[in-house]
Length: 314
Image (cartoon, rainbow, N blue to C red; front, top):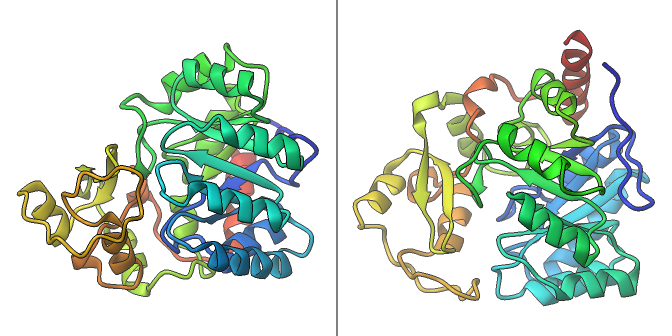
């Protein structure tokens, strides 16, 4: 099986591998720049950053990427959504991924600046709307993904339906952690894959080592669905904080006003920051369903080598 050529507007990465944009400060310049340098599309998780911080991350990633492709992921539910989009465009970002809601304005902004917009969708209906609105491609994300989820259906069910609906490139996401998973998605017709969880266990990912150790030690039964103040379910690894959420006793930190709408059950921003900084039992550690399959921390270059070798072996 040959790797497909992924083309999003005028962008052609060497490999059809997109690193998922993980907030808050999980996929920063160090990771996205390394992925871009090695031939994939590196993505900065913009949600949770100020516009000034995002500009700094984009500039730093550019220096590391050595001409590679850099994108940002901006959650529509974020209060600063528009500001982050405009900052990304001002910094001449290569493309913008967006999910957790649907914005019509972003397609106009993208068209005016010649910036490809790639929505993350979980249904054929949403994919059709995205294509009609002007999307350059879509990421089809199944329930196997980490973080906030837009469906309870598998990517294996969703992907064929979306492929039958749109003519733009479709990138598969959710639970993809190795070359065998890549081959399965490409065999189903995907133009490429998006992987997030695998790249957390890279040397270049800037999260605390305690965060990475939670990933390495996770068993299949440790990965659960939780309630999030965003209004969407989320997939995370069980810990003390998750138990408190389930019992309705999660601590109420001062509101950071990060969302357009928030249930107020707990502060998702502070929970993600705590986990990212190593206070893993005082926060939420988002991960994909298949995190338990990953057994080592590697440099991004080695991750690419391993993914491609596994793909060729299949």
